[in-house]
Amino acid sequence: MSYAGKTLHIDLTSGKVETKPLNMELAKEFIGGIGLGMRLLFDHSKPGTDPFSPKNPMIFVTGPLSGTMAPSAGNSYAVVSKSPATGGIAESKAHGFFGADLKRAGYDAVIITGKSEKLIYVFIDDDSVQLMDAERLKGKSSHETEEAIKEELGDYYVRVMSIGEAGEKLVRVACALNDEFRAIGRTGMGAVMGSKNLKAVAVRGTKDVNVANLEEFKEFIKMIHERMKGPKTRKYRTLGTPENVLVLNALAALPTRNFTQATFEGAEKVSGEYLNERYIKKIIGCATCGMRCDHIAFVPEGPYKGTTARVEFECLWALGPNCGVDHLDAVIEAISQCNYYGLDGISTGVIVGFAMDCYEHGLLTKKDTEGLDLRFGNPEALVEMVKRIGSRKGWLGDVLAEGTMRAAEKIGKGAVKYANHIKGLELPGYDLRGLKTAALGFAVSFRGACHLRSGAYSPDVKGSVDRFKLEKGRGKIVMDLEDQYNVIDSLILCKFSRGVYYDGLKDMAKYYTLATGIKMTAEKLILAGERINNIARLFNIREGKGTREYDTLPPKIMTVPIPDEGIAKGSCVNQKEFDVGLDDYYEVRGWTKDGIPTVEKLNELGLNDFAYIVKGKIEKSKKGAK
Image 1 (tube, one colour):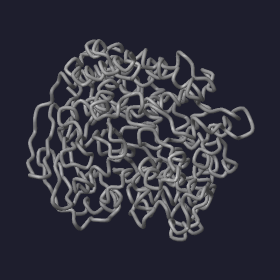
Image 2 (image 1 turned 60 degrees about the horizontal axis):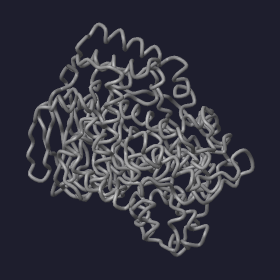
Image 3 (image 1 turned 30 degrees about the vertical axis):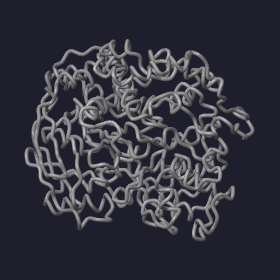
Image 4 (image 1 turned 90 degrees about the horizontal axis):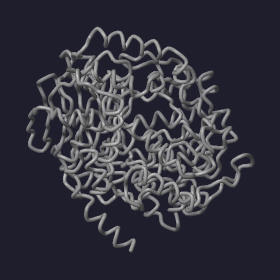
């Protein structure tokens, strides 16, 4: 019952708008969220489509719990498309208030294709859908756009998801934001919006979202809500994810100066403790959530006085230790500039760190930087480069706006050895040289370097495995975590809340059943998670991005041992052990040695309709092996 039962199709070229019934068989097989979105992407895209082509669909998807009272899941949505950063599958999730209204407007998915002749925004007002002129909003930030649209529509409670200048200028790491600080952050979805001349999507949803078993559902969410106030979410409610700074630094797993070191001598100055004591002014939460995890920082004095930004570990790390910067006011300013231009803060920080590394090694000169001293640790240079990337200002700003993979090719001179990405997506804040389960998990992630696709850093950090080894058995750990995360991201539960499901998938299955009325078990859910991972792999294979050669690690992770004195000194991921890990992962997945799902595996998962994608490649692989 909690499914809306409808999909909305918008062609920005013709202006045609139509609704179609949701295919409930697909909904059952792929749950919702990223799973349903990736399955719909197959149906509405053709092989080889350029990510910036009008024919590349952008799919907004809600989950079966979106729009309900469900803590952390009732406020969520996802976006799926083809990534301009990687050329493969792209997905990103956000919470806040936007997702709930999208579902209450009556849609499980909104599929946007085409390209408008001029800048527009889409206004979804329940059954009414209008394409509105947005030329006056050109160059405005997401927050400015959100405020302007609310004023124009005369309703402060309209929810808006929009892009900034970076998206308009097709910066490949551009994001989109809703509710001021909530980001559809990774894989360049803001640039896909910009390629369609789509400045924003505004939504007002007033319809009821019913659940199948209201009384039991209410009791269940009361329990979840109370657990959210307990020890499993303490970290997020107190210091927030910036608590990770000192934890990872102590493990020699905090990448510093573009993965040159694994510890940062200025860690105390950018720690969660220091941040909360001096800069955090309030902690807020999303609709229906019992946690409150948004740590809002305010700079009280100095050159960046008055700057406000939501601060999480990943952006703090990327724009701080990764760039050798220990000035928190400058880091907060850099995060604020990412929000202003609409940039993925993780990728942007890694791109700036890459440029600093190139500058330190003479690959970039002051002529290239137009006089900017781009050494590690320069806070003013950090902030300035974020602005240049967001606006594509100057030669270097334009080059770096292409992301580290393409920028390294354009710069040349061996710059590729300083480019820290997987499949074109920049690494997040975990030094994989001393977290080897994570190294495998990041390498095989279908959307590129990502801590959110498997959480494979967790067993390393917690000490449940020897993190300095990559051995047989790690493939199963990565696979199980991936499949669980696929379920979480298709129900679109907040990952910060994952610990409150004490019975794990059993709790999640009960959640689904109470909401939809469709009988679900833990076994069926995890099978759906496996199906989702395989459909993502199939999309990447179809686009020429999904084989073993793309499941790799950056040169620094495999050839530059950790130099820091201490427990991690000398550690890196060598090719021999990495191959052991890959072989192990492919084996437990039921894939070939080249990382291609077998026809038998596809039949087992009910994906036999997609066997045509792999048959030729499997035969070619067998011939190559002979």
